Length: 277
Image 1: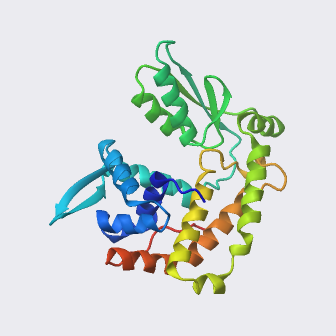
Image 2: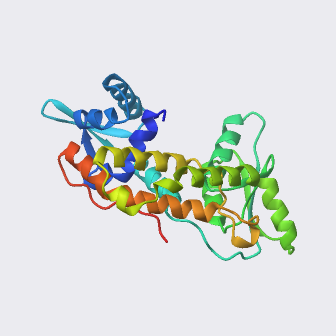
């Protein structure tokens, strides 16, 4: 696997380091990243860049530098991990949150920011300026509106009154065929790894690599899956099965991987977040 240093850093903090005081020394970080074939100069360059971008604060401990996530980045990390580990499974109310925006032609950056923020919350694009979510996200749209005063953003809680039409809307807003195929590929790839006895016996380095690999692969679904209510899902929709498999393997590999990280940083790592059944 071609490990991306930025993604590895985020996942290490999300699954381990934040539960061990939230601070890590450069030497320990370098040793951890070496597990993923990231060389020491690359570690230093990436951490320096992320610090300048506001991800980290640093302090000196003797001759060493220690890195901690800033409060803002910790909030973003929390929000992202909430998306990974806790699914929306509400009953379908027959209504959509519709976000409609108007942006001056001169403000392309604002338009792109709106698209990113709506996609982050799981909205799908129905038309260039109209986005839908099958969940009640009125408050989130209003927060987006407040954060983008150069745009006019309207939030509607509305429905068609026709389930078949709603299902058709879902296929227009999201590429469900491609998403479903990728979920099935994920299940096919990782099904053989679901073995409690085998995983509990693995050495810590192997467990860490495999656990980071599956969370990295599963994270790619976050911006694509609207977590459709059951009434709107295509027949045989594999999203829940993939989520369950991910959670099971993540849990099975947890003890050995956590103990391994703890040994490198020299302090215990607390219990991190797990998939909610």
